[in-house]
Image (cartoon, rainbow, N blue to C red; front, side):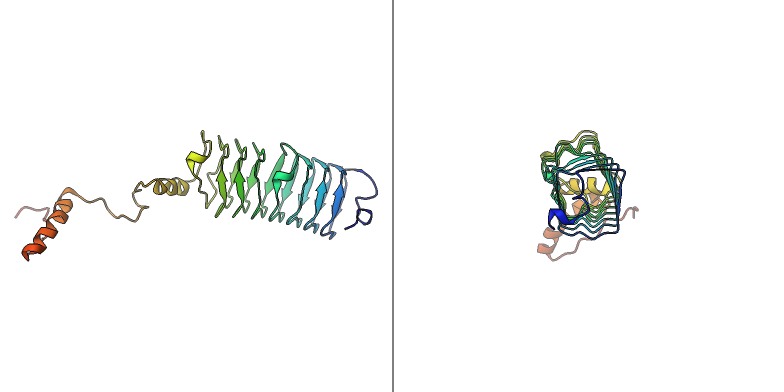
Length: 235
């Protein structure tokens, strides 16, 4: 959309302004500053916010799929109930201050981003890429990670306890006091070749008597005999 035809073209700075219920797909905004503004139920798919400043702003129920935040400064910005699929957050300015609540962040790219202390609450992060991301002290409350990639990340003190579908290679991430759910612990153990009681499908642990019986079975077959399990009771 040409820069002269959108509602942000009239001035370079907006403060405490509500933008609600408008559709401006593929919108292009360059260098505008927004302070304490609210964007509510706006359709902004494919929008581009190059060099813009957002300070203490809120996006509520907005469609922002494939939006671009090229060199945008995001300070104290909250996304609530927004659709943010396929967004490349690595384009944003350094150390964004963000909060995500009830957002669809599928297929997102967070490569090289600094997101320490960032809350992701009840978010869909499936198939997203977290590569070389600083996530220390980040909070992932009830979020979904199926198919997501975490590699080269600092996960120190990050909290994934109530998330699902989470898997990563410990050797390829920095871990210290990192909280993970039980299902992730089991998946990591199985990937390392460990057997987990009640989770590996191995059944009960063989007793010494059963092991001896198993060893005797091949020899018994050669002799044409059968091996009977030993009884626990004396005859």
